[in-house]
Length: 376
Image (cartoon, rainbow, N blue to C red; front, side):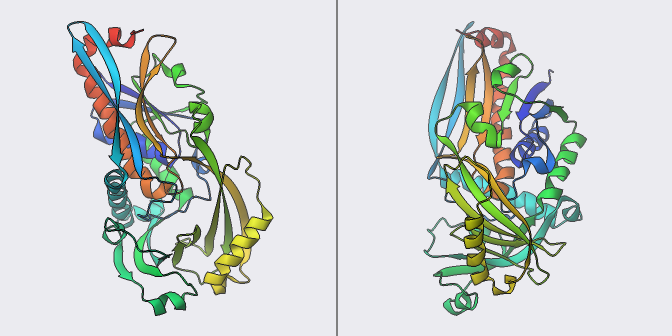
């Protein structure tokens, strides 16, 4: 039996999650991660490091997935792309369930401290009731709706809220833990910048694109644009619970230290990553109105970073044409918005199944795959 060769472009949380799930799902596979940045360089401090099964406003009503079908008649092979819209509820529900299983199992084991996944209580506040497919109560622990009085006690005028226990993720610990697992499963790492998938033709059977912030230029996709977010890190020993609101406000303490991440503000179509001191001040003042004991806390860091955004997120299989004739199967998992840590593991599971489907299509027809690749 031949070994399937897969390249994953990008070593962020989505790329690592995809690579590990491919290794675990497919028996005979060699996965290589190709990236020009690793570890903390791939992790934006504006990503809320928490599993929160409420897809951000950047996730739209539908995800478009392209399924690749190959039909072989004798030795004459044709291929076509079939576009099929999937319900975001069904698709994201599966991603969130897979992500919750992953984070829960790690946090509930001795590995959790090493991987930076820890249980934490906190509150989530919003203004309008959710629909019947509201998944939050089923994917967290000790869920309890808040009364109007309890919400007012939090200093909020939101109409609805809940208290529950979920998993917070230490970004600086989690990514190295994923990389360690990837290497232990036999994965290879190449430090390089890939400017187009065509560069990888002839070297790998399948490519998985998880390019993150480089996705716009990498794909030449006009529907993808950056969203600028801000975050502040403060020192405060008494903040031990998280607070999340629907209007992009978050307070997430580190489980092991007195450091608290607070933020963030999303600004579409912003191409600079410079810190806007006015936005930082407005954001911090709003956060202090919710959490008064943060008044006077020492600010130790301020960040601004861009997140790739697309409506809808890019989740598809593409047969990328190479050099005028051959094609290379590419799985795109790009632009998950600000819900990266809630969706990444589940998206990686989905990517692994797409790779498996392509592999099953290739292997039984290896004798016809070459003419298929050479279609003009």
